[in-house]
Length: 354
Image 1: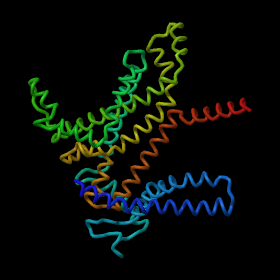
Image 2: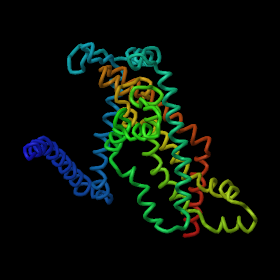
Image 3: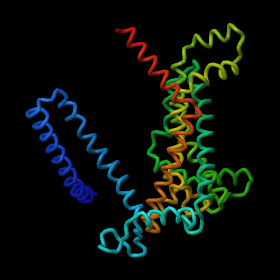
Image 4: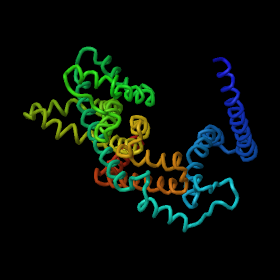
């Protein structure tokens, strides 16, 4: 055990040492240029921001740029076309167009084409976000009411979200075991037949959804609970005086005032669910293509079938789909107007302050 730890530290420490040296060198360079030579008054701010900017540049910007470069190539390790092998890879607009065409005309998995997988991904995203928002709102409204041990319940609801996702998914996969899983044990004791959660396409897709419902509802509950707590109770008191029932209060007060919270929560929920990898990949232990979504198909295209040029173009298409959805949803939900009103209120507040 100790040898494994020492060997791991031996692998990690040189990398950490290089990172520290680079950061220190850049900090010294900024200090000499901005502070000593230019005497710039914001030199300290730039020095504090620099490590985070460097991390974003290395961990976010560089992979995106490299993905775009690979999308303009015919890189395919299975065909012997390696970027590190000079002359084996071709780059150009033609290769990019060919990759885009292949995404829509050739199987993205072994048999499944793009549009069936895309339709399944849309269904998966809709089912997940709809259940997350509906159940999350119900739980948030329940936890927003006066009750005993409310703080304890608010803590317990975070448990599925606090567990490392891979660990939780692997635990759920064990519960779907045909012979020893909890669900089949209960069904057998109740006199029903066992369900082939792992081998049947329908039941496996349902198992994937069940797992992600369990994981996603707590986060949505916490977000919506924060929004509910920001609503002034006097609105509800006025509605009760006017004879408004619970449904009217929910429809006319809660939903409109929750829109600034719901819109980013739904957008984030769609993006995270659309790009959810751990649950569909690990629950789908037998690699049923009927349970794959776009992100898992992208992973298999890149790291199981070694079609890197194709997979990079595939990733760009997924990015464009999500960006289009985000822009359309924000336009339909009138989110831009709310942001503008917030800016207007902020400007008015500053004017009053002055």
